[in-house]
Structure formats: C-alpha cells, structure tokens
Image (cartoon, rainbow, N blue to C red):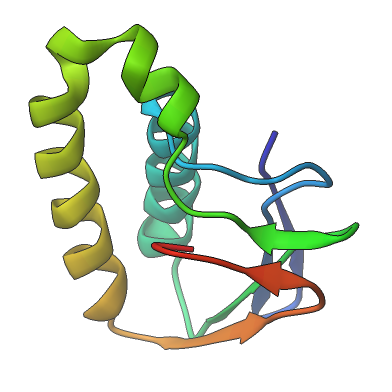
Length: 104
C-alpha cells in the first residue's frame, strides 16, 4: 500500500514493499497521494520510492483478467494519471532500488 511522508519541502511517496502493480485500488491511492502533494503550499519536490525487491512491475494483469468490464475505464484513468504525473509543476525523482517492468 502506498504511503506519503513529508520532510520539509520534500515529499516521499513510498509505493510499498510488494510488486507495486497498477490496479484500480492502487491507482486511486496514488492519485490521492499525488493530489495531497499538489495541494501543499510552498516549494516542494517529490521522491517516489519503494522497498523490497521491486519498484514496480507495471499493470496488475491478474486484476485485469478478473475485472474485464473495468479494464477500458481503468486504462484510460491510468493514462490520464501518467500524463498528470509527467506534467507536475515541481521536481520529481524516481529512487529506483529494485526491478521495474512494463508500465512501472
């Protein structure tokens, strides 16, 4: 489960210690945490990290197979989130400590 901490002007978004796959739940959680950073006043930077063997293994294909009716809306929302993330108006850093695959 992702979490957000703050150290002065630096926000640290920890993806977690599992495979950190994108599914509806994780996308909604990440979106909410990024919104908190966006709304914070003053100068800021965001570091995205994880713990364990994986940083992110991309899409949660098991979830997608089990929720086929949600796949198209989910993929659209994921693309919007990634576009939003790429255009954040502050510095972002990916502190990659482990494996990254596919959309991760």
